[in-house]
Length: 207
Length: 249
Image (cartoon, rainbow over all chains, first blue to last red):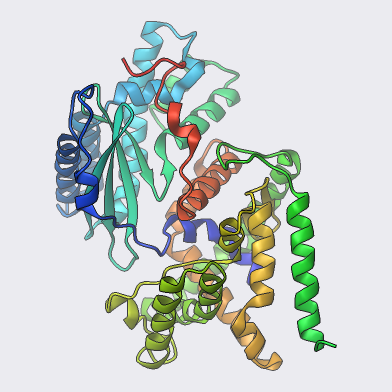
């Protein structure tokens, strides 16, 4: 019987029991190389502001539809949604027209904030805490810890692009949003025999 | 001559080493190595059907009938029973700090936590530091191997599958508990899993039933999360944020 149940193992892992807090001081001591436009402390401040907004939303007690709209604003204000859309579409976007790309990015933004906004709803009564930031190539990794009611704390890492100081990925316990959505969007395109326009139309109602 | 039980363990360990040396795979765990995809996808369909018909409804009933404090107590009790096995793996990995930490946790929860029903250790700052024999194999230098979706058990890798089997054999609790009481241990663990399925039902449902390719999502989530737990940073991520091989602007 034990064995019957362990599809769930995946979820145990998702909300892995181990917390993930690293020494802030050591990471902050890392000085950004001169070639970088932003600094680690700026990247950390950006995520600090985003997290402050997220904390305010999840504790606002607003209705679900209001919260989802506010989450979409967090994406608009702090994320490089255009870049995320391009990364997620990947090579499939190579043959897309400029108009298709724009339409995809718009539809994707609604889809992603709805999908992840619903997940954030489980954060109600909890809080996210920024721990540390470090420079990696042309981006920064800002480590945060989510403390949810009745759960062990878990790690959320935001990847901030140096080019414009906006976040381009979010890794929850190691699972990258870009990779997960690239796989999903790829599968959706396959189901529609590669018809991007159909995918764009459908995305608007999904998530 | 070794007692029968010990002989079984020796035999199991020798088999494990033979299997591990036989399972090839990429040197660095990155990307997806899934040579059995066809078979895995078939298993995934069966697992989905099992979840839909059995696990999901029974976890719903379990969650509705038992109040949250009772479910938490069962979850804590089951988690406490897994601590001796975790400590053993800490020792096998020479993680003495973790071994002491987890032993302290086990002692505190077994006594003050009334046999493990209450997780007083976490409140006192001794949260569990999880481990298993799959991690021990990783520490010993064995490769991740191929992705496998196991019937009923779900996503795994060849290394973690072998780790899971060895974990069962080496579990000190399993060794100590009299054979007529083992059913209780299994029942508690099953109940605890039902509780997990119930608690995370929205998230699990969204992965299993709302994604365009639930097999690919489950595979990615398992591999990425497992590598994160084991502290493997992926070389593959180097160009994850480049588009068509260009660097960012």
